[in-house]
Length: 228
Image (cartoon, rainbow, N blue to C red):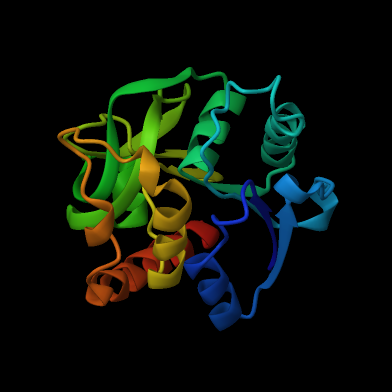
């Protein structure tokens, strides 16, 4: 499988997704939009992955690549390709499909649980409740028309969706590793406040075993998604 991974900032790369791709023998090409790389064409990949970033999908006047990136998402789905979005990437898929993206009531930053939303999408992906996953976001999205809702949290109703078995959006970060979490804290720690779903910067990378527990969750979701 050929994977094109769109990276929006230097410190939010594919992390665990790169490990999964290497273990499965998939070819991964990282497109560094922040560094001026050109967007790929749909003929160049089988799976399109969009990573996170501190910008909003609504910042099209500030980031020239946002509008064409959304168009690429639509083209990929029209061509029957698979699309995966993490955090900002999930919001990009939702927005490209016509859904609203907007500021949430709270930020979610830290290790917090998500709850399965019963239904076909959760059944297809074999999702249960997860006692803690890694979050770092302050915006949310409405579900796109036709999307299957499969995860929520105390702070955010819409955490994850599956659209026509071809687009998977996850607001949280299963792909985070100890190294990538340290980079997030280094570059974004100043934005952490005292909200009910914000944890101290020093605690986010303090327990390496947390990252070990995420890896099989990521592997299971990705394996099932690409086999649909």
